[in-house]
Image 1 (cartoon, helix red, strand yellow):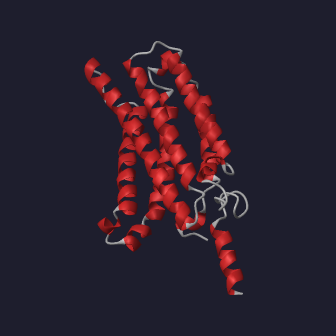
Image 2 (cartoon, one colour; image 1 turned 30 degrees about the vertical axis):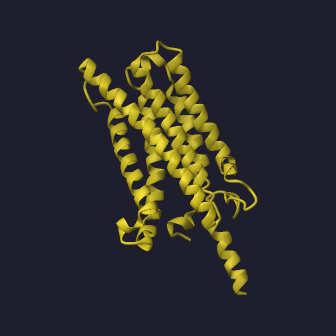
Image 3 (cartoon, one colour; image 1 turned 30 degrees about the horizontal axis):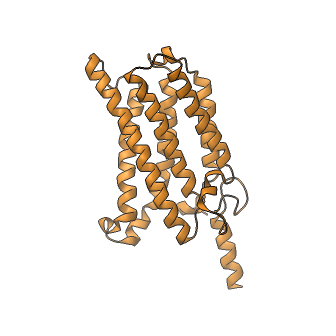
Length: 236
């Protein structure tokens, strides 16, 4: 009876928001690379790659200037961060979680570096041309998202690799669920920032349509959101 109960608990912990238990769980016999396309991850992949392609195609179909690096770097950063989420979501055994977290941290680090480079480009361009700072909805959303990304990275790194900062492993583990929740929120804000970019003056030259960004963003959120396991947030 006890074994049956334990198996039932394990299945419940592996149940995504959409689908059956195990649909979004990494299989023991499968390598971690399959996590990138497991379950509804294919929907998220379709959305984020289409979104990135939309931005890059628009940039390279226009006159390429220094400012062009801003959308290129930021879209690349969000692409990498989405991969970081997808690779970690299905992990459930200690070995899988350790491997997944290391890859998650690496991809997030690369993504954050790309985002920061994009911020440096836009700030240099503003200063060089005497432009205004952080006035448009895109700029305000963007700055807020940049700040949250940095905080998210600091908390994520310290809670996993330096738990003593929080008074020990148990205390660090206690805030993991908040780290997960804030990560999903920041992803939403990132996509909203890209949507707001379609109303900027620079996009008048690129011609990116809001509807195309919204559709791609919705695919990302559906693909990622469907694999969320509410049990990881302490919910039943």
